[in-house]
Length: 302
View 1 (cartoon, rainbow, N blue to C red):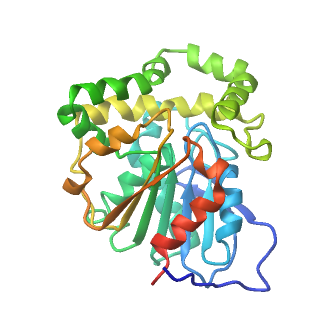
View 2: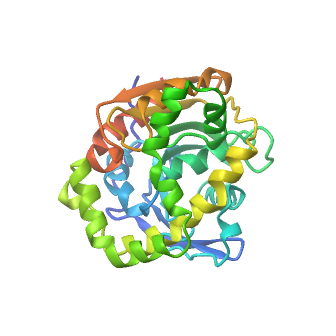
View 3: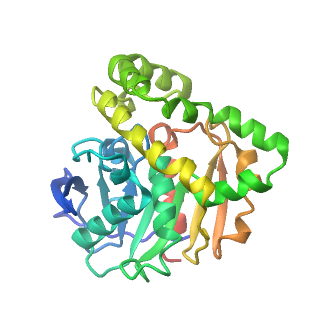
């Protein structure tokens, strides 16, 4: 697929940082310039913040107008007080606020990892029915974060052995629903937890987690508590005609390739492709060049 280039000599060397309002909540965003190029909005997962995207953004900034933001409760964005303020509808509201601020009335490409991917699925699968989103999502690349509606289908239809295997991978979800203890764990042990994640996934030293991990990990627990079990009990249609690229990491300890095999995505997606890569869960941290190339292949015009 051809590589379109939109580099500009006047493009700033550092991303422009600012904040916007989503309702009454302030979100921190980084804008990597090149306003003449198609806009790509990259959304981080848990327990990350938008800093994780910087290597990918720098590789893509000649091809896209790259925008990242800290999701509510993470990084420099404000954290809501109520668990209900973390439900997927509010997360989609945040995306719409970012879209309207950085690409008003324009189509955008989406890139999500982990929980960033989960919440972007909710935008992609409601694109046809939400007037704010209709016709505005040009493509979507999902990395290591399945749609919750598809997972509800998986729970009901997948072979027993595959469901048991995924349940073992998802052991931490039940722990995250325990009151108080996980918050104390993140705030008190985040240096050890960050070091363990880095060792397990061979994350380069310059791409590891910083001191904000404790806050991001503790606040982001509400994403699980507000969304996982309610959606599995009452799934939505989960269908879309937005072109979707599903990136499956072969050594992901949290979502296995065998689970993606059993999702039966042809039931839900129109134009889509699956790409299997030899990687652990934190692909954007361990191989940003591969992520950048996959996005170019899928989202740039032929």
